[in-house]
Amino acid sequence: MIYPNIPLAQTVIELCKAKGIQHIVISPGSRNAPLTLGFSNNPYFKCYSVVDERCAAFFAMGIAQQIQKPTAVVCTSGSALLNYYPAVAEAFYSNIPLVVLSADRPKHLIGIGDGQTINQKNVFDNHILYSANLKLDLKDENNLPGNEDLPIFKNLEDRLERFLGLQKDIQSFNEEEIQVAINHSIIKQGPVHINIPFDEPLYQTVDKLSVAPKVTEFSIKQKTIESYTLQKCLEDWNAATKKMVLVGVNQPNAIEKKWLDELAEDDSVIVFTETTSNLNHDSFFPSIDQMIAPLTAEEEQELQPDILVTFGGLIVSKKIKAFLRKYQPREHWHIGKKDANDTFFCLTNHLEVTPNQFFETFLPKLTHYVKSHYHSDWMKVRELRLEKHQQYLEQIPFSDFKAFNYLFKAIPNHTVLQIGNSSAIRYAQLFTLNKTLEVYCNRGTSGIDGSTSTAVGCAVANEKQTTFITGDLSFFYDSNALWNNYIPANFRIIVVNNTGGGIFRILPGHKDTENFDTYFETNHNLTAKHLCDMYGLDYVTANEETSLEYALQGFYEKSEKPKLLEVFTPKQVNDKVLLNYFEFLK
Figure 1 (spheres, rainbow, N blue to C red):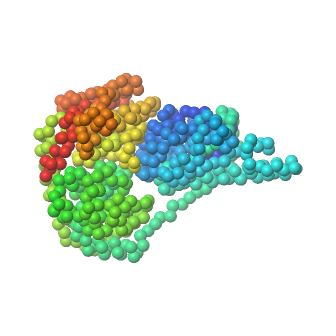
Figure 2 (tube, helix red, strand yellow):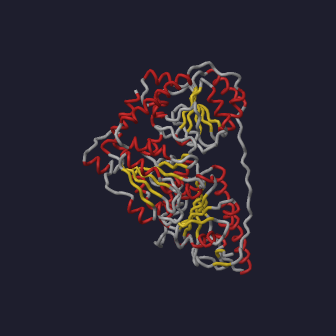
């Protein structure tokens, strides 16, 4: 087998293998050549070459999101590393294990005007679980220019002994730092950064390892709910007639069905599920904005919960955030092993266990259901909302709203849906999606910058078909996501093109002015056709109901190439249709 000649590179690669990091996304460069040679020549690793570092990091994040294990990204020195930052921040807030391996120049070449050199140590300091800054191998007894680790000894034997001791110390330090970083990513589920200095020559290889790093195991200590806390929760729960459970981003099948059934049977409980919650039950409330937006002040007071229970990741709905900040519950419990966000400014209890652990400990100890009409009353409201929703669809012109209705209905059963940020995810919140779908969206920082790349990575790591639905600005912003050789033939992209940032038309502001068109909505006349020609995707288009229905008929059929459907909608109509929707529901 071929190995890099540099011991430090061997150490990084061997420890990645020992820790089960199998997917390696590499961006071309020279300083990272020792890592590239080692990873790409080892059959254990599945390596991908993605030129654009920003796309590469989101691509890796899409893989990690699916396999729920650390995925590594490898880059050269300099500004290449900074292009990882949007994905690092997203992984930080979305709890996705991403291992950043950045090659760096040795210390004596930093700060002297050398090319492709920046201060790489701790560069992600505000959005990283752990930063490991490795030390350079000592090559021989003459050492390296500018290195202060080795004092001058008069006796050559003393100097050699000191050198060998330092070499061993540095090797031990590097092994420990690498493993601490990777363990953080595994245990705490998030991004870590390992910065690795290499000196030339970079391309030499050997056929035998010169290192044998000692792998340190770790154990995860499971927390439990203290008996006092549990008893207090039980007392408060039994005394409350209105309990609201709000579920954010959640992995599919993460919550045992028996606990969902038990919550559904309690008439004092309503469960609001976001599109990204991947929780489905006939008695739950999946279209939160549809429920919240039309409420009168009196109805809002009736909906106000005594206790709010949250679990899962970040919340999309601005309407539920505004509602719960205005009508705060007496208590807000958050269930989850990581930090609890005080999103509604009334957090009273953080239960640092998994939702399954909590429900298994808590629900069997409930001796009775509290008498309440909370759930049944709001179920009636939900049914009325659904009737009005259907009535509205039947009377509106072709628009974003109507297009999304067709698109969501057409997605095949038991497949994966990735949704772009901004308008796309907010429209998704208004529809009851197919319960067999697995739904994802980059909601850590809610940016549009890497949605397509994440979806591509997801499709690569998932045996199921993946559909990505996005807006035009998000798609064009991340168009380099298509610049790789790994997109599966069954991958489907749907671009809803309203020739600008349509979401800004529903926000307060002076519409239809030159200033608005240029600096907010960002008008354009771009289409995805030429990108599809360049990157080898089949291109389909639609601009009204009949053509959209026709395009969707064969869109998901087996094909030799990925497909992209571009749906053109009228920007002058879209905002009016959406704003009128909430009025119509009243």
